[in-house]
Image (cartoon, rainbow, N blue to C red; front, side, top):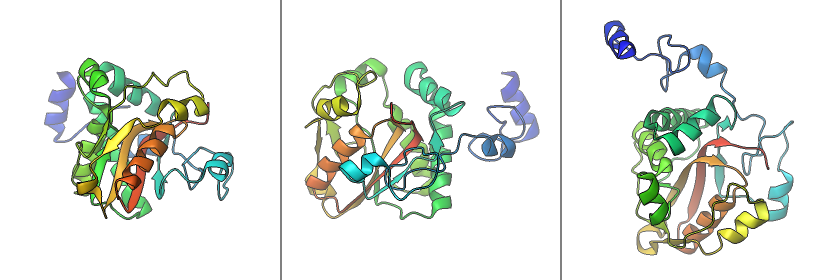
Length: 231
């Protein structure tokens, strides 16, 4: 309540990290500069790297995750706390923050905008348990900032899969085999972007991208708020 009154009195938003006047995405300029920006990173899958390279080992073995991949932040403080708070504590303000930061990164990179954005689907059982889709919360704010419509019903997770938290990359790929379905009639010939909170091995993104391409999408981008190193 005190913060809300102070925001009103000063006529602006306060930084979520230090409470100084906010500049962008609910953060002040110094706190934005101090975020764990994901650079250098693999240009094909955004994997955090120690030094720039044309492709990481995984992409050389498996091919790129999508036509383009952007994950502006590394999964490190404070971004990792935002992901956890959004996913497990229903702190929807974290979704707004990550969505706005993701939109700003997309503007800065100058990447082609899609016709539609598509949040990573949750299985209906998981959605009922959580009550919301964290990827959709990020996509909602990102889409508003970029004026790109969100289409949350064009792809769905039809097969319930095991929790991937403790699975390695190969196990995650097997776990997600044939897990998604998509609406080919509405996707054919279109450029779509998949939105998620965090990319770990890229298995979920690869599986959904393959489904969207099979459904007829001509270009698929993957944009995630954060990226982890390979486990």
